[in-house]
Image (tube, rainbow, N blue to C red; front, side):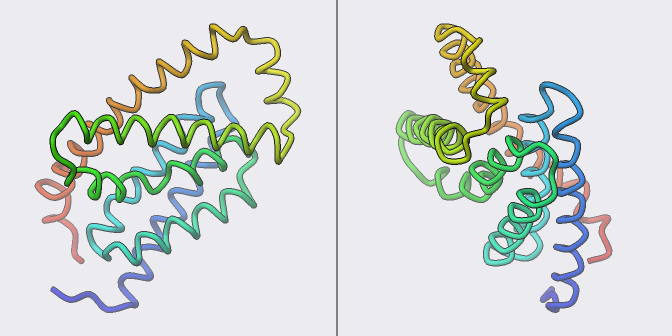
Length: 177
């Protein structure tokens, strides 16, 4: 069924509000600065499923700008800006063959994006709280956190696939779209 732009705009607006609300929760708990951008990025699944990639990128850009302006935890906002579009990027990366190459590219993307995001936060935005946190954390602990981020990313990637199946099989048929 072809959707009108009004329906697309309404759906994207409601889901963008949900994503921005999730980004507001980023400053509530210590782990939430990473968990909230991940949860907000999962809201992108219905947007690109129902409206397409063009609307998905517009939705992502709007949420990234709103999170940057309104979210109390700027670390969450920067992480969303670097990772919030990954559910759509995953579809492009899934075409890579063989599987080992696909995972190598995905993990390279993760590590490059983490380095770019934290480099931006530390050296361009000069986030003093983050600088202090990194100064008191040992280099071995930062390396361990990066390894844990890679493991968590693999779980996140698998979760996106499962949530897309859940959306298309269970939730989408019940929606009046």
